[in-house]
Length: 351
Image (cartoon, rainbow, N blue to C red; front, side, top):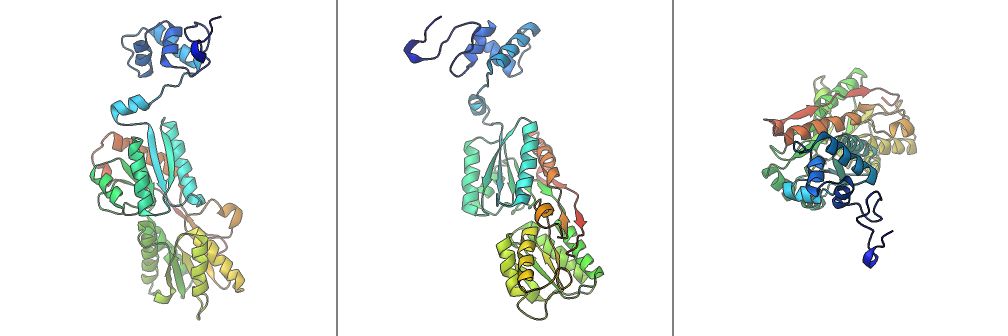
């Protein structure tokens, strides 16, 4: 049995698997073909290769567990099989569920996803955008994009970008995948009217977010259509977190008259409001009705009482993959496309 030279792996032994990393040279030698032939089989350029040879090469690849590196191919094509996904908060189960759906859909299409947490910080967002460029990412999905110089530059360069849940923060930014937030907010306002909730309040998310802004505007207009006006003192802006919802509720519930119903910009805000209601002995919904948004996956375990808007996070992945494919195929008008997903109001005991 030949011994390795200089401590390296055994090479050139037909019928055995090398002890080191399997290379294309190992596959070619064991299959009895040239490196160029193996490369043609790997890349699907096999018109000049017989069927018997193709099967033999594929069999050797499977037997030896060879995994071709994509670095060289990516450099030649200036494109990889990677997609970057930027999300604002990895601790939010709703965002995590969307990211999981997107990753699954891309993986089924032989594309890997890199997840990045921006914390809605423009500088962090730009750093990750630059990193994705360095990895020759095939595309970038932005779940909760914020305005930033790097994003504007990529939009101007026609980089394949897909905006998820929140519309692009600049005109012509790229295609959007999400729901009609304005329509959903308006339906909640109409529901409050039907329940005869006259003193209504709202704790909405950051106004710089199209999703938060449209949810609030729809809710306000739904009330106004029935002659119910929102008191400015009952309108609060908050981060999309439990602690922010709690802090807003401390202020909102510390004055008279108390609101009869509160619309929360997302379910996490509603969790915080609910905690404050319990602390001051307000019953939900007998004293204060609550309505959330997103139908966070945690609801099933932590808040099965919360009325909310169900956003189909499991459908975001297939929709995002379809939009990316149209971008990669340069379909006309795709950069202005909106992929609107269905939503539904879920009525539970809180409202």
